[in-house]
Image (cartoon, rainbow, N blue to C red; front, side):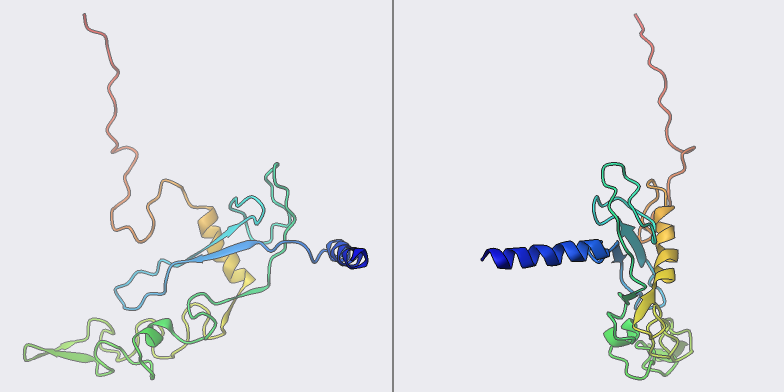
Length: 191
């Protein structure tokens, strides 16, 4: 029994010495792909330290947090979160369109409503899926099934530079301006 424990300990020490034991940076893909032309693309990428959970930039080798100081590594590519690694347009897949046609007009380019023919509001008459433009390829990874480190780095930079007071992109309300905020008047004691 002691021989097994020694072998396991030796293999763990060898892995740690090689640097293979470094945890991978935490990459989180947030949001869903738009399904129609009216849907807003609210997908974003967030990156965090695997040790303490603080937001961190891609390619950071060591966490800058003084309490953490975790060494980490970053992958060169990640499975595409939008198509889940299939390379197929998620809107075409969700709306069951095999040829990349517009789901609303079924590839006709126009709709008949109350006896009148109108241009399709989803594809604007192009007859194609508004997300992939009829290619059937995922718009996030261009059908490659993976997104590269540089893509993740560019998307995560938006998250890291974001102001905490901003509303999320999916919130329809206009952001409040700091000048418009009601100001409190100084209180005076009246006797």
